[in-house]
Length: 132
Image (cartoon, rainbow, N blue to C red; front, side, top):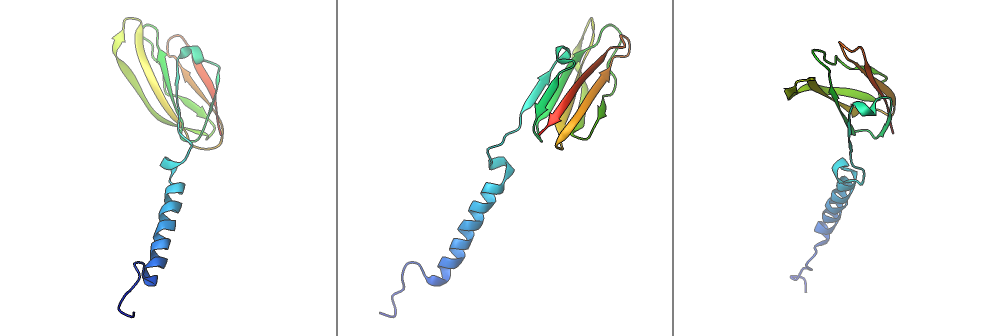
């Protein structure tokens, strides 16, 4: 019978298959849907001298306690594997001195070192970051 059409008209099947393939392809390439996930690394002054292994997109939070009226300065980064995100002073201040927090993110494959100096004690917090 000429008047009866099948449920799937041939003119609709090809575009429908194309849309389904595009949807599957896009969802597999979306970074938020893949199996890799970012990690957060929380470091304290006891982590001084360590090497941190990380992936691109991983973050590092460093919390340092200054002594007396001193404070830690701006971080120095050697290399381009990581980028500086922020620094902040955590309140309330302890009687011993301010607690400061620094944030970094892995941006490129390679190695970078971070050093942060204390203004009074002249001590240096330093780590190496290896981004994979």
